[in-house]
Image (tube, rainbow, N blue to C red; front, top):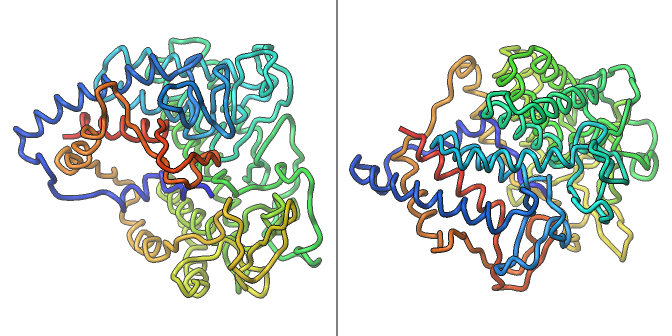
Length: 479
């Protein structure tokens, strides 16, 4: 199950930590800044020179760097686009450059951008992996003509969106003077806008021109959606699943901020208009993962039934507030009180929300697995462990955000102070070894990409690297 994507400005506001930590005195902060600069340099030098292949990255590495994993084991010619892969590391390099103006970090940014350009598809976006071996098993139809296979630009879990968001910021850092990066970024953005349906929704995947159904409000199907209405190419449908809308919104806001073109803000508004249309009627005024062109909740994968989703509904509520903050338009807040009240009364006995609630009955809905077959059930005692069937309830936090969101419109969000970050920075530096590595040890559970290492086995993580580099960079930039 993807991590709840609260990466937008709204949620960052709620999560800022106040007060002074270790080293809050100015003298101690100066010493910590010096350590942070040295640690940043050591960590980036290691990851850039020892870990990167073709300028890109995967999710996890063995300590000796002989084994690499994205979604499955990867060759040295394969890099991952889906977060926390190549563009995630690139965004960390960008944070380091912005904090220090060190040209070495800008060179690292350019290397990542050029790696992504290699794997841009003819359809304008990216798939989850780039294979630099023209005969490799994971090649796709790249614009450079060096790969065969599918031409599916994917919005699943932020693949294309994060690549674009990194590239447009790299384009800006390079003063829009790297012609290939600039051209590829604008082409990707144009392709993303072309993939938006008339109602404002986006598909999970596109490879070319899409159908143009007329917008309509969401409604319940007249057929039994538990057994009927499956669509083989569900990835063409209106999609909220796997953070599609949140990552798209981040990208559109970033594009508007960098290029100052209204078409990106207009697309964000249209996305918000779709989210309003997609709210199901009472007594279940929340959202599904995917919708048919008739705006009925739709099947996706075999274990993803048409239903109200506790996870995606919370995500949509936060996103609508974010769109309000970007536009000041009240209509984006109007669906939220009813949705929050619904989620509150749908809370499970343990305080969490079910991933799925059955249409009409509102009973929590789960799946059991027998071999390759999945079966709907109301029981939660035999749940497959590869998916998140329950999710934390953030209703209280969302209510608090809604209560204050109007007062924050037009206001610049507060940045954390250096003093408030000092304790976290101290821990990050203490965790960095002499070679510039942040080593992690498996607890035997699944990692990103479904990798399961033996308990206690050491590995390197691109997610950990990117988070820690960003923490150090934020500290160096803070006052």
